[in-house]
Image (tube, rainbow, N blue to C red; front, side, top):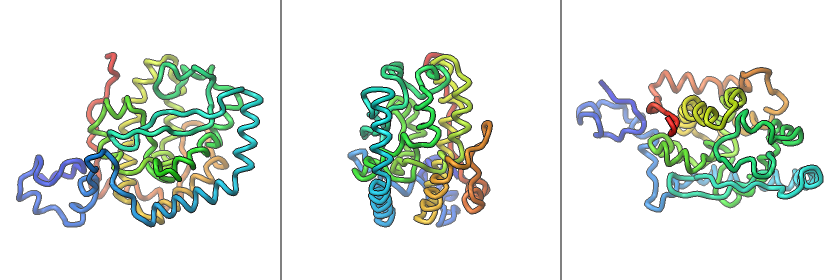
Length: 284
């Protein structure tokens, strides 16, 4: 049987004859065609994607600086210092950077680590919720984009603990530069919030995130990685800009435009698969 696992290189787990039968286009796509450098850096971005990132990030900073300054002042007066939150995130399996966001939890609430779930709801003020709902807390990450740590579009940068726990998942995923938005963000973020918001303890939040969120987001991230084009990035950025105004009720995610929404089932029918092992909580 032909192996369509995108993380298996030709000749690994398949016979030479089976490898020769793979279509040339399929062999050239996917993570196997995007090596990671010995220094642990992701493969270089296409020049057009980098120019798109820089030009859009600079334009948004010039246009939105009154919003940034106003948000800083409101947070300073209402919540006190610090205004910004700096958290370590991974841009490759071995390379980290400091992600910049507006602080949207009370100081010390993240001491236990991990993602935000219902167990941390008491630490999120109404102002913090507004920033999270509108994604305004992500605006400072435009600085990360200019520095080259992130792209506008890509997988969300994961915490070191998850990358170290699941290298077989994040190895392929982080061959794309992490992004402020992406296919997984638009297709799964609101459902992820719904899943985690029902958790009442840190242990439950971690278990749900590892079992139900990481594998699904990884699959979407790899679909984006295979289908990535400049026009696809532009479409996702436009959809992200409209998301605060089209937030749906319940757990359904933002309805993507038909051209974007067709990508996931089309990739699935083409044999794009994400090999995800049984994900368990370390304490179990």
